[in-house]
Length: 323
Image (tube, rainbow, N blue to C red; front, side):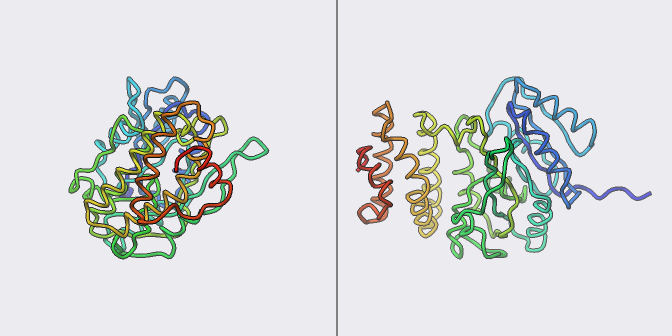
């Protein structure tokens, strides 16, 4: 009797109070065309049935292992817990409220295996609430396309600076050798923890691959409980701006001016306008003041006056007194 092949990739799945979605995430792992994976399910002290769902998955499939945090540590702490348990050559991440597409691991693992690169990244789409009470995947957004299309093998930031726009942990499969060699860890106690770590990965990798295929459907929760849906809160906005600035600082320190300039352009065109809209009627003057300072610093890097914006954003910019 032949033994099953040794797993090549560990998927770290952190979850906190995501009982409504965790089974979908787990099912998307079970449906992978690449079967040579194991998963570490990290229950970050959930108050709902998330931990029970994780335990049931492990009871039914030995590829799943469960860790229960006694106290909530946050997404970064949960991911770091998983990292400490990886004993495969490759690692990947899937948040427990998102889901993989069926060939995600096959394509990403296949890319790094064929190329020898330190990691591979793929495209992703938003999974948005629909009128039937379910969720429907959207289209690949332009900034995602810019980072992942066309396919590239053994590329670098020098050759492909726009890859720096793909900052999410769960769009990638990477070699544990990179994490150990570069001393990578997720920064704990902060929201938007992917931003800085992604730029560290890009700038410290010897080479990476990109594929245009959609590998993850990223859920925008109907109840508005996702952290990305709370940018109107001052502490969340502060973490967001700190992460954006920190990612650019990593690229600056690594001597990657083209990638840093690409990030600045993308932040000005994509990240800034929604924050400006929130600032217009915000009750806290500190929100406008801190966003304004961040905005002026970014524009100063371009050596230009504020770029042309559509009329709605331009009006909001003026109303929020950010320029």
